[in-house]
Image (cartoon, rainbow, N blue to C red; front, side, top):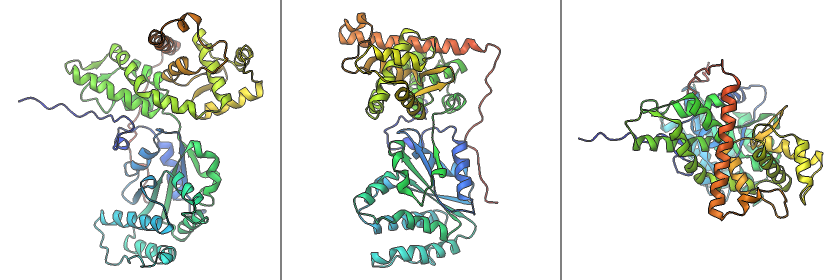
Length: 438
Protein backbone atom coordinates (compact mmCIF):
# COMPACT_ATOMS: atom_id res chain seq x y z
CA UNK A 1 0.00 0.00 0.00
CA UNK A 2 1.47 3.31 -1.08
CA UNK A 3 2.23 5.82 1.63
CA UNK A 4 0.36 9.06 1.08
CA UNK A 5 2.61 12.09 0.65
CA UNK A 6 2.26 14.81 3.31
CA UNK A 7 0.53 18.00 2.17
CA UNK A 8 2.64 21.00 1.29
CA UNK A 9 2.45 23.30 4.34
CA UNK A 10 3.27 26.41 2.32
CA UNK A 11 0.52 28.32 0.56
CA UNK A 12 1.51 30.88 -2.08
CA UNK A 13 -0.42 34.18 -1.97
CA UNK A 14 -3.62 34.48 -3.91
CA UNK A 15 -5.23 31.27 -2.69
CA UNK A 16 -8.35 31.50 -0.52
CA UNK A 17 -6.67 29.92 2.49
CA UNK A 18 -3.32 31.69 2.15
CA UNK A 19 -3.87 33.36 5.53
CA UNK A 20 -3.46 29.92 7.13
CA UNK A 21 0.02 29.42 5.69
CA UNK A 22 3.00 28.91 8.07
CA UNK A 23 3.55 32.03 10.13
CA UNK A 24 6.69 33.47 11.70
CA UNK A 25 7.66 36.50 13.74
CA UNK A 26 5.40 39.48 14.50
CA UNK A 27 5.81 39.26 18.29
CA UNK A 28 6.35 43.03 18.36
CA UNK A 29 3.08 43.58 16.50
CA UNK A 30 1.10 41.48 18.97
CA UNK A 31 2.84 43.14 21.90
CA UNK A 32 1.72 46.50 20.53
CA UNK A 33 -1.83 45.20 20.20
CA UNK A 34 -1.79 43.89 23.76
CA UNK A 35 -0.66 47.28 25.08
CA UNK A 36 -3.35 49.05 23.09
CA UNK A 37 -6.31 46.91 24.15
CA UNK A 38 -5.27 46.90 27.81
CA UNK A 39 -4.59 50.64 28.07
CA UNK A 40 -7.19 51.90 30.50
CA UNK A 41 -6.19 55.55 30.15
CA UNK A 42 -7.29 56.09 26.57
CA UNK A 43 -9.54 53.95 24.35
CA UNK A 44 -8.87 53.56 20.66
CA UNK A 45 -7.95 51.01 18.02
CA UNK A 46 -4.56 49.87 16.77
CA UNK A 47 -3.94 50.12 13.03
CA UNK A 48 -1.66 47.65 11.27
CA UNK A 49 -0.23 49.29 8.17
CA UNK A 50 1.56 47.31 5.48
CA UNK A 51 2.12 46.67 1.81
CA UNK A 52 0.17 44.08 -0.12
CA UNK A 53 1.16 40.57 1.01
CA UNK A 54 2.93 41.94 4.09
CA UNK A 55 0.87 39.61 6.28
CA UNK A 56 -1.85 41.92 7.60
CA UNK A 57 -4.69 39.42 7.19
CA UNK A 58 -2.58 36.53 8.47
CA UNK A 59 -1.71 38.58 11.54
CA UNK A 60 -5.36 39.07 12.46
CA UNK A 61 -6.25 35.46 11.69
CA UNK A 62 -3.50 34.24 14.05
CA UNK A 63 -4.79 36.26 17.00
CA UNK A 64 -5.65 33.19 19.10
CA UNK A 65 -2.17 31.76 18.58
CA UNK A 66 -0.61 34.60 20.55
CA UNK A 67 -3.35 35.49 23.05
CA UNK A 68 -4.75 33.15 25.64
CA UNK A 69 -8.38 32.10 25.92
CA UNK A 70 -9.40 35.10 28.02
CA UNK A 71 -9.11 37.18 24.82
CA UNK A 72 -11.69 36.50 22.14
CA UNK A 73 -10.63 37.69 18.71
CA UNK A 74 -13.56 38.46 16.41
CA UNK A 75 -12.34 38.55 12.81
CA UNK A 76 -14.35 40.40 10.16
CA UNK A 77 -13.26 40.69 6.53
CA UNK A 78 -14.68 44.06 5.53
CA UNK A 79 -13.87 43.45 1.88
CA UNK A 80 -16.35 40.59 1.81
CA UNK A 81 -19.21 42.70 3.17
CA UNK A 82 -21.61 44.79 1.16
CA UNK A 83 -21.27 48.06 3.03
CA UNK A 84 -24.12 49.87 1.31
CA UNK A 85 -25.64 51.12 4.57
CA UNK A 86 -24.75 51.59 8.22
CA UNK A 87 -27.13 48.81 9.19
CA UNK A 88 -25.11 46.33 7.11
CA UNK A 89 -21.97 47.20 9.08
CA UNK A 90 -23.60 47.15 12.52
CA UNK A 91 -25.41 43.90 11.85
CA UNK A 92 -22.15 42.34 10.68
CA UNK A 93 -20.39 43.45 13.87
CA UNK A 94 -23.15 42.07 16.10
CA UNK A 95 -23.33 38.85 14.07
CA UNK A 96 -19.60 38.24 14.34
CA UNK A 97 -19.64 38.85 18.09
CA UNK A 98 -22.60 36.50 18.53
CA UNK A 99 -20.91 33.75 16.51
CA UNK A 100 -17.81 34.01 18.69
CA UNK A 101 -20.01 33.48 21.76
CA UNK A 102 -21.79 30.52 20.18
CA UNK A 103 -18.43 28.93 19.35
CA UNK A 104 -17.64 28.93 23.08
CA UNK A 105 -20.93 27.28 24.04
CA UNK A 106 -22.45 30.26 25.81
CA UNK A 107 -26.23 30.46 25.92
CA UNK A 108 -27.85 33.08 23.71
CA UNK A 109 -31.06 33.40 25.69
CA UNK A 110 -30.01 36.69 27.28
CA UNK A 111 -28.59 38.29 24.12
CA UNK A 112 -31.27 40.62 22.71
CA UNK A 113 -32.32 40.47 19.10
CA UNK A 114 -31.76 43.40 16.78
CA UNK A 115 -34.61 45.89 16.36
CA UNK A 116 -36.74 45.78 13.24
CA UNK A 117 -35.92 49.36 12.29
CA UNK A 118 -32.35 49.95 11.05
CA UNK A 119 -32.60 53.48 12.42
CA UNK A 120 -32.38 52.10 15.96
CA UNK A 121 -29.35 49.88 15.41
CA UNK A 122 -26.81 52.40 16.68
CA UNK A 123 -28.48 52.84 20.04
CA UNK A 124 -29.30 49.12 20.30
CA UNK A 125 -25.72 47.98 19.69
CA UNK A 126 -24.21 50.45 22.14
CA UNK A 127 -26.83 50.61 24.87
CA UNK A 128 -28.40 47.14 24.79
CA UNK A 129 -26.45 44.49 22.89
CA UNK A 130 -22.89 45.12 24.11
CA UNK A 131 -23.77 45.60 27.80
CA UNK A 132 -25.78 42.37 27.79
CA UNK A 133 -23.01 40.56 25.90
CA UNK A 134 -20.45 41.45 28.56
CA UNK A 135 -22.87 40.40 31.26
CA UNK A 136 -23.12 36.94 29.69
CA UNK A 137 -19.37 36.66 29.03
CA UNK A 138 -17.90 38.05 32.22
CA UNK A 139 -14.30 36.85 32.16
CA UNK A 140 -13.30 37.67 28.61
CA UNK A 141 -12.21 40.60 26.51
CA UNK A 142 -13.50 40.89 22.96
CA UNK A 143 -11.21 42.26 20.26
CA UNK A 144 -12.80 43.23 16.96
CA UNK A 145 -10.32 42.48 14.16
CA UNK A 146 -11.45 44.52 11.15
CA UNK A 147 -9.53 43.62 8.00
CA UNK A 148 -9.10 46.11 5.13
CA UNK A 149 -10.25 49.37 6.66
CA UNK A 150 -10.01 51.00 3.24
CA UNK A 151 -13.50 49.59 2.59
CA UNK A 152 -14.81 51.66 5.52
CA UNK A 153 -13.17 54.76 4.09
CA UNK A 154 -14.54 54.09 0.62
CA UNK A 155 -18.06 53.52 1.95
CA UNK A 156 -17.96 56.79 3.87
CA UNK A 157 -16.72 58.63 0.77
CA UNK A 158 -19.52 57.07 -1.29
CA UNK A 159 -22.10 58.15 1.30
CA UNK A 160 -23.08 54.62 2.29
CA UNK A 161 -21.82 55.09 5.84
CA UNK A 162 -22.29 58.22 7.99
CA UNK A 163 -19.37 60.64 8.19
CA UNK A 164 -19.21 60.13 11.95
CA UNK A 165 -18.79 56.34 11.67
CA UNK A 166 -15.29 56.45 13.16
CA UNK A 167 -16.52 58.54 16.07
CA UNK A 168 -19.31 56.03 16.69
CA UNK A 169 -16.93 53.05 16.69
CA UNK A 170 -14.69 54.97 19.06
CA UNK A 171 -17.67 55.54 21.37
CA UNK A 172 -18.18 51.77 21.58
CA UNK A 173 -14.64 51.39 22.93
CA UNK A 174 -15.25 54.26 25.36
CA UNK A 175 -18.40 52.63 26.68
CA UNK A 176 -16.95 49.11 27.01
CA UNK A 177 -13.44 48.90 28.53
CA UNK A 178 -13.31 45.16 27.78
CA UNK A 179 -13.82 45.77 24.07
CA UNK A 180 -10.74 46.29 21.91
CA UNK A 181 -10.23 46.81 18.20
CA UNK A 182 -7.55 46.40 15.55
CA UNK A 183 -7.74 47.36 11.89
CA UNK A 184 -5.54 46.82 8.84
CA UNK A 185 -4.85 49.25 6.03
CA UNK A 186 -2.76 49.03 2.88
CA UNK A 187 0.22 51.38 3.10
CA UNK A 188 -0.81 52.95 -0.22
CA UNK A 189 -3.68 54.55 1.73
CA UNK A 190 -1.42 55.88 4.47
CA UNK A 191 -2.23 59.49 3.66
CA UNK A 192 -5.84 58.75 4.68
CA UNK A 193 -5.08 57.66 8.24
CA UNK A 194 -6.42 60.96 9.58
CA UNK A 195 -9.84 59.94 8.25
CA UNK A 196 -9.86 57.10 10.78
CA UNK A 197 -9.74 59.59 13.68
CA UNK A 198 -10.79 59.55 16.49
CA UNK A 199 -10.87 55.74 16.29
CA UNK A 200 -7.18 55.59 15.33
CA UNK A 201 -4.54 58.09 16.37
CA UNK A 202 -1.15 58.43 14.67
CA UNK A 203 0.68 57.11 17.71
CA UNK A 204 -1.38 53.91 17.49
CA UNK A 205 -0.18 52.85 14.03
CA UNK A 206 2.08 49.80 13.71
CA UNK A 207 3.84 49.30 10.40
CA UNK A 208 4.57 45.74 9.27
CA UNK A 209 8.05 45.43 7.77
CA UNK A 210 9.75 42.45 6.17
CA UNK A 211 10.79 39.48 8.30
CA UNK A 212 14.25 39.38 9.83
CA UNK A 213 16.83 36.75 8.75
CA UNK A 214 16.07 34.68 11.87
CA UNK A 215 12.33 34.84 11.24
CA UNK A 216 12.83 33.90 7.59
CA UNK A 217 15.01 30.95 8.58
CA UNK A 218 12.37 29.70 11.05
CA UNK A 219 9.67 29.94 8.41
CA UNK A 220 11.75 28.00 5.87
CA UNK A 221 13.21 25.36 8.19
CA UNK A 222 10.62 24.49 10.85
CA UNK A 223 7.34 23.60 9.05
CA UNK A 224 8.96 20.89 6.86
CA UNK A 225 11.42 19.61 9.50
CA UNK A 226 9.88 16.13 9.52
CA UNK A 227 10.44 15.86 5.76
CA UNK A 228 13.73 17.56 4.98
CA UNK A 229 16.32 19.99 6.28
CA UNK A 230 17.47 23.30 4.88
CA UNK A 231 20.93 24.56 5.81
CA UNK A 232 21.51 27.92 7.45
CA UNK A 233 23.47 29.01 4.38
CA UNK A 234 20.56 28.19 2.10
CA UNK A 235 18.17 30.06 4.39
CA UNK A 236 20.46 33.11 4.19
CA UNK A 237 20.50 32.83 0.40
CA UNK A 238 16.70 32.78 0.26
CA UNK A 239 16.42 35.69 2.68
CA UNK A 240 18.70 37.75 0.43
CA UNK A 241 16.65 36.77 -2.60
CA UNK A 242 13.34 37.69 -0.97
CA UNK A 243 14.35 40.49 1.37
CA UNK A 244 12.25 38.72 4.01
CA UNK A 245 8.99 39.48 2.20
CA UNK A 246 6.43 36.94 3.52
CA UNK A 247 4.79 36.16 0.17
CA UNK A 248 8.13 35.50 -1.53
CA UNK A 249 9.22 33.27 1.35
CA UNK A 250 5.98 31.30 1.05
CA UNK A 251 6.67 30.76 -2.65
CA UNK A 252 10.18 29.55 -1.93
CA UNK A 253 8.92 27.20 0.77
CA UNK A 254 6.23 25.88 -1.58
CA UNK A 255 8.64 25.09 -4.40
CA UNK A 256 11.25 23.60 -2.08
CA UNK A 257 8.59 21.27 -0.68
CA UNK A 258 7.41 20.34 -4.18
CA UNK A 259 11.01 19.56 -5.09
CA UNK A 260 11.24 17.28 -2.06
CA UNK A 261 8.00 15.52 -3.07
CA UNK A 262 9.64 14.76 -6.41
CA UNK A 263 12.80 13.49 -4.66
CA UNK A 264 11.63 12.17 -1.25
CA UNK A 265 14.78 10.11 -0.76
CA UNK A 266 16.87 13.29 -0.51
CA UNK A 267 16.43 14.59 3.07
CA UNK A 268 18.48 17.76 2.52
CA UNK A 269 17.52 20.67 0.29
CA UNK A 270 20.86 21.41 -1.29
CA UNK A 271 22.04 24.75 -2.70
CA UNK A 272 21.30 23.25 -6.11
CA UNK A 273 17.66 22.74 -5.10
CA UNK A 274 17.47 26.34 -3.88
CA UNK A 275 18.99 27.56 -7.14
CA UNK A 276 16.45 25.56 -9.13
CA UNK A 277 13.59 27.27 -7.25
CA UNK A 278 14.74 30.81 -7.99
CA UNK A 279 13.42 31.03 -11.60
CA UNK A 280 10.08 29.54 -10.52
CA UNK A 281 9.64 32.01 -7.68
CA UNK A 282 10.73 34.86 -9.93
CA UNK A 283 8.22 33.93 -12.65
CA UNK A 284 5.40 33.69 -10.09
CA UNK A 285 6.33 37.08 -8.61
CA UNK A 286 6.69 39.21 -11.72
CA UNK A 287 3.13 40.47 -11.48
CA UNK A 288 3.71 41.57 -7.88
CA UNK A 289 6.89 43.38 -8.86
CA UNK A 290 5.03 45.14 -11.65
CA UNK A 291 2.36 46.31 -9.21
CA UNK A 292 5.06 47.58 -6.86
CA UNK A 293 6.65 49.51 -9.73
CA UNK A 294 3.30 50.91 -10.86
CA UNK A 295 2.72 52.27 -7.35
CA UNK A 296 5.93 54.31 -7.31
CA UNK A 297 6.17 57.96 -8.27
CA UNK A 298 8.51 59.12 -11.02
CA UNK A 299 11.35 60.12 -8.68
CA UNK A 300 11.25 56.77 -6.89
CA UNK A 301 11.40 54.98 -10.25
CA UNK A 302 14.36 57.08 -11.34
CA UNK A 303 16.28 56.35 -8.15
CA UNK A 304 15.59 52.61 -8.38
CA UNK A 305 16.59 52.55 -12.05
CA UNK A 306 19.86 54.31 -11.28
CA UNK A 307 20.58 52.16 -8.21
CA UNK A 308 19.91 48.87 -10.03
CA UNK A 309 22.20 49.85 -12.90
CA UNK A 310 24.96 51.03 -10.57
CA UNK A 311 24.78 47.80 -8.58
CA UNK A 312 24.84 45.84 -11.83
CA UNK A 313 28.11 47.54 -12.71
CA UNK A 314 29.61 47.21 -9.20
CA UNK A 315 27.78 44.66 -7.04
CA UNK A 316 30.42 44.70 -4.30
CA UNK A 317 29.64 48.19 -3.01
CA UNK A 318 26.65 50.10 -1.68
CA UNK A 319 25.36 53.10 -3.61
CA UNK A 320 25.70 56.71 -2.48
CA UNK A 321 23.27 59.52 -3.26
CA UNK A 322 25.99 61.37 -5.14
CA UNK A 323 26.45 58.40 -7.48
CA UNK A 324 22.75 58.32 -8.26
CA UNK A 325 22.79 62.05 -8.96
CA UNK A 326 25.78 61.70 -11.29
CA UNK A 327 24.19 58.77 -13.12
CA UNK A 328 20.95 60.68 -13.67
CA UNK A 329 22.83 63.73 -14.97
CA UNK A 330 23.69 61.64 -18.03
CA UNK A 331 20.01 61.01 -18.72
CA UNK A 332 17.10 63.22 -19.68
CA UNK A 333 15.81 63.05 -16.09
CA UNK A 334 18.31 64.65 -13.68
CA UNK A 335 17.31 65.02 -10.02
CA UNK A 336 18.84 67.22 -7.35
CA UNK A 337 20.10 65.87 -4.03
CA UNK A 338 16.97 66.90 -2.12
CA UNK A 339 14.65 65.02 -4.48
CA UNK A 340 16.88 61.94 -4.47
CA UNK A 341 17.06 61.87 -0.67
CA UNK A 342 13.27 62.16 -0.40
CA UNK A 343 12.81 59.28 -2.83
CA UNK A 344 15.40 57.18 -0.99
CA UNK A 345 13.65 57.72 2.35
CA UNK A 346 10.33 56.75 0.83
CA UNK A 347 11.77 53.60 -0.78
CA UNK A 348 13.44 52.61 2.48
CA UNK A 349 10.14 53.11 4.33
CA UNK A 350 8.43 50.81 1.82
CA UNK A 351 11.09 48.07 2.23
CA UNK A 352 12.05 48.50 -1.41
CA UNK A 353 15.70 49.22 -0.55
CA UNK A 354 18.07 48.80 2.38
CA UNK A 355 19.45 52.10 3.64
CA UNK A 356 22.46 52.13 5.97
CA UNK A 357 25.07 54.77 6.88
CA UNK A 358 27.30 53.18 4.23
CA UNK A 359 24.78 53.62 1.43
CA UNK A 360 21.89 51.75 -0.11
CA UNK A 361 21.27 48.41 -1.77
CA UNK A 362 18.19 46.86 -3.35
CA UNK A 363 16.22 45.08 -0.62
CA UNK A 364 15.63 41.76 -2.41
CA UNK A 365 17.69 40.01 -5.06
CA UNK A 366 14.59 38.99 -7.03
CA UNK A 367 13.37 42.59 -7.00
CA UNK A 368 16.73 43.76 -8.32
CA UNK A 369 16.59 41.16 -11.07
CA UNK A 370 13.17 42.47 -12.09
CA UNK A 371 14.46 46.04 -12.06
CA UNK A 372 17.40 45.09 -14.29
CA UNK A 373 14.96 43.66 -16.77
CA UNK A 374 12.13 46.18 -16.57
CA UNK A 375 13.16 49.47 -14.91
CA UNK A 376 13.67 51.50 -18.04
CA UNK A 377 12.23 54.92 -18.76
CA UNK A 378 12.13 56.55 -22.21
CA UNK A 379 15.23 58.60 -22.94
CA UNK A 380 17.46 57.09 -20.26
CA UNK A 381 20.96 56.75 -21.68
CA UNK A 382 22.44 54.20 -19.30
CA UNK A 383 19.72 51.64 -18.91
CA UNK A 384 21.45 48.46 -19.90
CA UNK A 385 24.76 47.29 -21.34
CA UNK A 386 24.68 47.64 -25.11
CA UNK A 387 25.59 44.01 -25.75
CA UNK A 388 22.53 42.69 -23.93
CA UNK A 389 20.26 45.20 -25.68
CA UNK A 390 21.43 43.81 -29.00
CA UNK A 391 20.35 40.28 -28.08
CA UNK A 392 16.92 38.87 -29.00
CA UNK A 393 14.31 39.41 -26.24
CA UNK A 394 14.44 35.83 -24.96
CA UNK A 395 18.22 35.81 -24.87
CA UNK A 396 18.29 39.25 -23.23
CA UNK A 397 15.84 38.07 -20.56
CA UNK A 398 18.02 35.05 -19.79
CA UNK A 399 21.12 37.22 -19.52
CA UNK A 400 19.45 39.68 -17.18
CA UNK A 401 18.11 36.96 -14.88
CA UNK A 402 21.51 35.28 -14.87
CA UNK A 403 23.16 38.59 -14.01
CA UNK A 404 20.72 39.13 -11.17
CA UNK A 405 21.33 35.66 -9.77
CA UNK A 406 25.09 36.18 -10.03
CA UNK A 407 24.73 39.44 -8.13
CA UNK A 408 22.68 37.68 -5.45
CA UNK A 409 25.33 34.96 -5.16
CA UNK A 410 28.08 37.56 -4.74
CA UNK A 411 26.16 39.30 -1.96
CA UNK A 412 25.58 36.00 -0.15
CA UNK A 413 29.28 35.11 -0.39
CA UNK A 414 30.19 38.50 1.07
CA UNK A 415 27.68 38.00 3.89
CA UNK A 416 28.98 34.49 4.63
CA UNK A 417 32.63 35.51 4.68
CA UNK A 418 32.32 38.80 6.57
CA UNK A 419 31.92 37.13 10.01
CA UNK A 420 33.55 33.68 9.79
CA UNK A 421 33.57 33.14 13.53
CA UNK A 422 29.89 33.84 14.14
CA UNK A 423 27.19 31.25 14.46
CA UNK A 424 23.50 31.88 14.06
CA UNK A 425 21.29 31.10 17.01
CA UNK A 426 18.22 29.06 16.24
CA UNK A 427 15.24 31.44 16.35
CA UNK A 428 12.51 30.69 18.81
CA UNK A 429 9.23 29.45 17.46
CA UNK A 430 7.00 32.50 17.00
CA UNK A 431 3.76 30.78 17.94
CA UNK A 432 3.79 31.32 21.70
CA UNK A 433 1.04 32.65 23.93
CA UNK A 434 1.84 36.29 24.40
CA UNK A 435 -0.82 37.72 26.66
CA UNK A 436 -2.75 36.63 29.69
CA UNK A 437 -5.93 37.93 31.12
CA UNK A 438 -4.48 38.66 34.50
